[in-house]
Length: 163
Image (cartoon, rainbow, N blue to C red; front, side, top):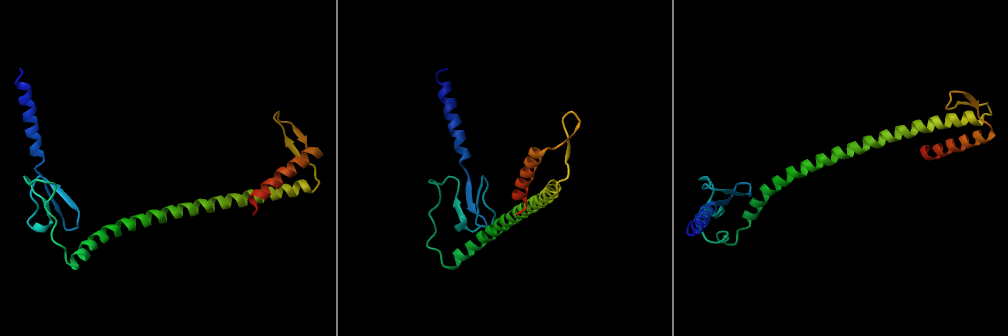
C-alpha cells in the first residue's frame, strides 16, 4: 500500500505530460492556433511557434523581418479591426438613434404638458369659477387661496416644460 500511492502520483504526472504535446502556429490571419495535431501543410515553417517535445515556450523568433512582412501581417489585423470597428460603429449608431428617439419622445411629452398647463392657466386667469370633485365625489368651487395655489402650480409646470 505504501508503494502504490507514489506510483499513482507518478503515473498521473506522466499522463499530464502528454497533454503538453501541443502544436502552436500562426494562421493566415495572424492569429495563434493551438492544437494537438500538426498544422496543415500550407502553413510555412516560420509560422510554427511550438512543436511537441521541444523545450521552452516557443521556437526562437525568426530573423529581422523585411519591410513587406509587417505590412502583410498588419493587413489581416486591419481586416479584423475593421470588422470590429464596423460592429462598434453600428452599435454606436443604434445607441445614438435610440437616444435621439427618446429625446424626441420626451420633447413631445414636454410640449403636450406645456400646452395643457397653458390652457388650464388661461382658464384660471379668466376669473371664471373653477369647480373640482373632492375625495367624496362632491363638487366644490375653488376660493381665492385655491385659485392662487393652482395658478402657482400651473406656472411651475409651464416654466419647466415651455422652454
